[in-house]
Structures are given as structure tokens and as C-alpha cells.
Image (cartoon, rainbow, N blue to C red; front, side, top):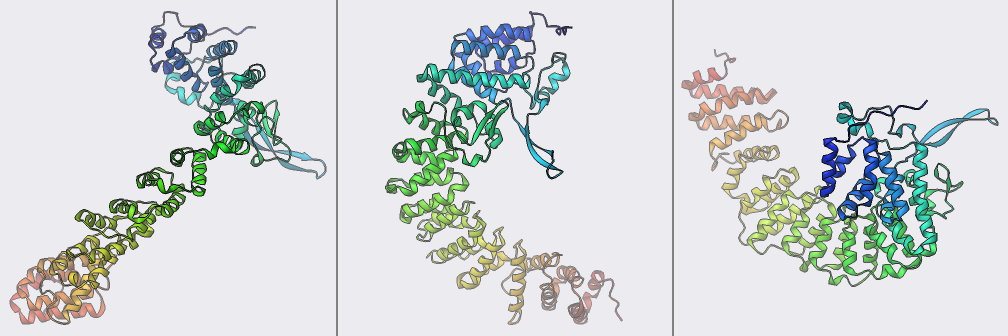
Length: 588
């Protein structure tokens, strides 16, 4: 019994009429609009109109449609009729897109099954290739025009395609048969036609070796005669005893490819699929080695920063073995280091170091390289800087930027170099040390402290120490407490310092719950000494001292209480203030 056809919308569908107006105007939005149509009868009628339209806009829209996956519901009549029209017309460009499009509709999966071995009387695992049956999109009894489907279309069609699995296998064989006949009957058109198709494949079409073999037409074009693989009704498979690692170029119609190197060279440059590029370079090296030797220096430099990894490898290989790189300008080298892929930087930087003299590199460019995150770039910039010193105010300012160098392994070495060249400047300013002591990186602050201790001009500057009292960093604060402790041995530890800034330092150390345990007893002693020497500051010091005493234990705690008691004994008028801050103390 024949299945009833689903009801079709009326021919005066305003949405379809709007879609046709987009087609007439050549609007790019037409492709998305026509893919939303689910009226098979209207699409079947439109196929001839679309294909026979001689306008450039119509052809451009057709190419854009065929570049999309064949997964628009109810589009079987449109796709099949367009395919037949192109086949009958001998349209190489459209058939190239059908070859690629049908290749994309089948993707096998590996599965492990068990097979009984009568000799060992045991089940043994065996790998099996299969194409999932749930990749078929169309069902005549499914309503594609409903509101639910309109909202969930992308989720529904993901991973599915038009036509049954058997039909898709037939269509991809039929598409390849077109090009096979072209090679036999019109050989002058074969290589240009298949090259157009090969440029349409992308890396997404060959994520692994199995996906490579699933591209029926691609494998025929590139590896048809290879003994490593063999053709089966359901697809290409690896031959017994072979591996894909041994797969070498062995194309169908080999003699046509050997007529000249330019089509293969064009594939190498413009292919978007790595296996195609690899095939092209192997063909050139085997059959046309002189073509690669004719590459110009500008071509090689452009290939280094190309998104195609195959071109990158060829360019670097040739550049590393070829002389005459003295003519490459420093601007060109810097462009290579900035735009090349990160994994190529080691090789590029080695070439730059061999061919560029430090005096050719401007100071600002050397600093810019040294500031980069990739270690090879930073190392190259540092190598250039070690032969230079800042000459202008702008160059001096650029040196300070090295405290924020992005390459962690080289940051400390860069900062030490910066401290050395800045110390040698005749206009040295002690406040320059603060640029490193205020760095967000701890290793930079450590080097800044070393610089402060070794450079008398900075070490003896009161303004530097005044600024350090407000440092937000623990390793600087704790060292300041130690420095005050040393000064107390020889006199007033606070001489030359603003008392309010020292109190800020003490409070900051005391409030740090995770660090500064060794410094807190020093804070207590320094505050007791200050309180005895300046009783008028008791209102400011006693609250901080109370926090300090609660932060220490043992002898330091008892010494602090003794100091408070001694202060009250010497200044009885301050007893009420002490009792307010230390309510737990009992006075006899």
C-alpha cells in the first residue's frame, strides 16, 4: 500500500515568495532562507530555475549552498536534481562541490566486537568499522514544518544527512565517476577540475586517519594506486600488513599530474587540508625538486607566517639551509617573530640570532622582544639588550618596563640587567629603586631590595625609606621592621621618619595573620621604646600596642606588659588611657 504524501503548503506561500525575491536580488541571506524551506515539491521545481540561471549571483549562491552540509530536511529533490543537471552539463566547478559534499556525508566509527575462535575455544576482540544507521535525516511521515522543529532545527539535524546510507554511498561513487570519466575522455580538464575540488577539503574533513579514508573521492585522486590501502564496497580500508604511516602519493592518472609542477605547487600553497598539502610537497620533491628551489626570499618569509603548517616547515627548512639572509631587514625579522606560530619561535629566533647583529636592532625593539611572554622571543630580546645601554630619556623609561616582563624564567635576569644599566646612568635618581620595590612580582622586589642595599645613593636617601614605609608588600614590610630594629641599636630608630608612616607599617605587619611572626616581637619592642621617648603619642600608639601584645607569646608578651607597666609608673597621668586600652590588666 502506497504511503500518503504529507500535505503541501499552497503555492502562494508569502515566505517562499520572499525567499524567491532574495534569490532575484542575489542576497547572501537567500542561502539560509532556502535551507529553511521544507516544501519538497516547490524545491524540486526551483532546481531547474536555479541551475539554469546564468547570472554570476545565482552561481555564487549555488556554490554557497553546496558548501553547506547536506542536512536540510526535504531537500532531497533539490540536491538530486542539481546534481543531475551539473553532471549532464559537464559542470566541473559544481561537480567538485558535490564530490566534496557527498564525501562529507559518511563517517565510519571503530567498534570492538568479539568473535569466537574455535582453535582457542575463546572469544577474541576484533575491531570493526561501521557507519551509524542513525545518520539518516529524512522520514516522510515526520512533520518538519511544525513550531517545535523550527525551534530545535539545529539540534535535530546535527550529525544527520539527506538520503539513506546506501544512497549516499552511491552518490559519492557517482560523483567520483564523473571525474574518472573526465580523466579518460577529456584529460586536459581533469587536473584543473580535481584541483578545484581538493582546495575545498579542510582539516575538519580529516581529523584522523579513518576520516581520511572516508573521503572516497579525495583518496581516489591522491592515493588510488597505493598498495597501502584497498577499496571495498563500503569504503577504503588499510590493506593487510599496511599502515597509514606508509601511505605515499600514488594518484590516479599519474601521467596527467606529471605534465608540469604548477598545479601541484598551487595545491601546496592554497590547500586548506593538511593531507592535500603533504601530498603536494611529496609529489614536488619526488618529481619536480627544482620547483621548490625556485622559491623567492619573499615567498619563503610569507610562508613562515602562513596558517598552513606544511608551508611553515618547508620555508624554515629552506631558510635554514640557504645563505643570503643578510638582505632581510630587521622589520621583516620582527614581523616573523610576532606573527609566527608559537611552536616555530625557537627555530625563527635561532635564525634571527645568526643573521642579525645587535647594532641593527633599535633599543625599543629589543625591549619589546624581551617583554614578550614566549621565552624564545624574550631570550632573543635579552641577547640584543646585553650589547646595549639606554641613551635617551625614552629608552630609560623603557627599561623600567622590564619589571613587568611576561616571560617568567627570564624576568629576574632582565631586572638585574636593568638595575645594572640604570645604576650606571649619570642622572641616577634614588627613587628609581622604588620602581622595582613596588613591582607585583616578588622576585623583582627581591632584586630591588638587593639594589637598595648595594647602592649607597639609594640606601642613604631618606625619601626612599619614607616611601617604603607605605609598601603594600610583605617581604618589603618585614625587611623594614628589621631595618628599624638595627637602627634602634645605634639610636632613635625613627629619626628622619614621619611617625604616622611608621605606625602604618607597624599596624600592617601586626594585621598580617599569615606572615610576619618573627617580626612582630620587634614591633612590640620598637613601640615600647617609642612610647617611652614620646609619651604624647600614647593615644596613637597604645591601641596598636594592644594588638601587638595579643599577637605574641612567651617572653615577648611578658616584656611588652612590663614595658606598659613601666610607662604607667613613669607617667601616672596616662593610667586611665592605659586602663581603657588594656581593661584586662589589674593594678595593685
